[in-house]
Length: 80
Image (cartoon, helix red, strand yellow):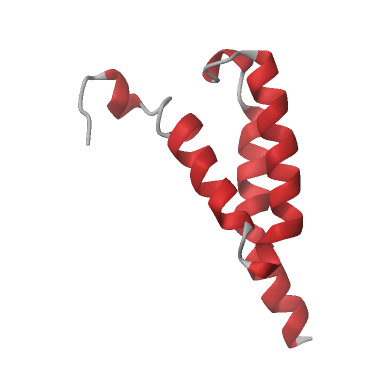
């Protein structure tokens, strides 16, 4: 039972990112619908790779290229 909780905990960020990607409009992605479908495939791969800690690199890439790009803070001109 402990391993099930561990695997679910490791998979949780990938599941949240996948749901986020599914719920975004194609216009939120730099390449439109084609970019969205590519990110969906990459996030599905990250579901398989998160238990061995490799999938988190994909999740970080999704955050920096999609989530941070469409953040309201980025639209006001504030950049890190």
